Length: 304
Image 1 (cartoon, rainbow, N blue to C red):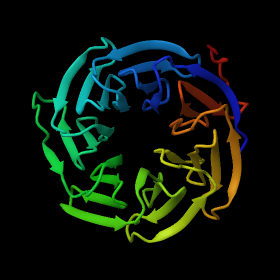
Image 2: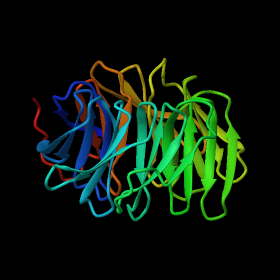
Image 3: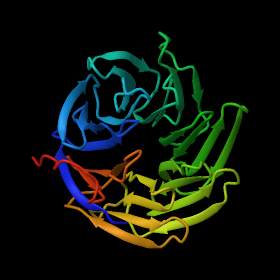
């Protein structure tokens, strides 16, 4: 895959815990150890807005389907629902007993789903005034590290080594046990497979329906870091960060390593592929690097 480094943004918010595109990739969010979320133009590197209100490190964030709202989660155990334009919190939701690690909106952004170190997944109706979770899943035996939310399913990855799929339409729970602590999960765009990044420096491709292990991807190093992965190029390629200051790409079907994107010193732990284009953002230390195809039109990012 022909990817080149297009530039970098110095986020100036302590360590960047996560980087996320909005629904159409026109802007991106960075979550900082300085307890703030920042909204950027990823093409120019221009800072658009800063959202401050958490009392602990911000671990994850997501933009709504109309890009009008943001939901963020923090080590302060809270979930905050923000108005993008005003920069003010619309709602502050408390219910988790531990740090909140991950958050996703459902398809119409009426429900926020959060996962925590208290081993629970909570669903919040953020369009009403209700401040309590409308549903709590308590089946995990360890920290919830990652979530996939589809039209009628919530899929949760946990450090207990299991992937739990809650089928809300059928009212069923399916548990697929990998046996190794899971730090990140993503679903292929066709919904047929789940990609699970594990703490043993292996990414596993699991069949969504049967739970069968289809492929493994190795070559990157995780050590004790929660390193994210993604499926790109129309479900043909797997990409992951690494503790060795690089990102690694594999062929999804064959499992062989295709390429390494070498970066400056730092653990490459969070990444976000553009929802429609070829660009990919990588977070390490205080920096977000943008990589993509050289032919794509893009302004040079501001190097700080």
